[in-house]
Length: 131
Image (cartoon, rainbow, N blue to C red):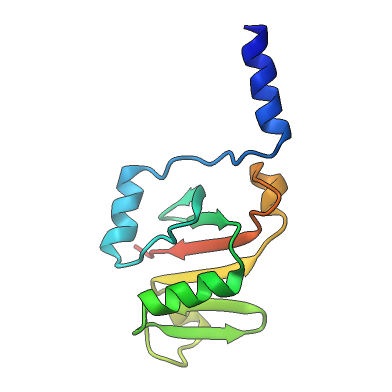
């Protein structure tokens, strides 16, 4: 028992990702919305009401390019420090964007402490699928 506790404390102290499993019902919501999940991301937290938060150690620009290739017909809002790829008309207003299916990619260094992630897991991916 003592050895198990020691092993667990070592895992936590080395910054191993503590990620939840994406519930199958939520995975179905994302898939049915036509939104792929970045293959090098881990699910952190969320649901359809608040959005799904993922983290990756890949640079934000690489993740953004990946999503733009996967969702070439989607529009991009890239202003005021926000990068949001959304299903809707180009140039839509913020209220229209927020009511659309969307993927936002940004750097969030707070995710490390908030979710006990590895130190390099600072790229945040938020997927929104409005009801």
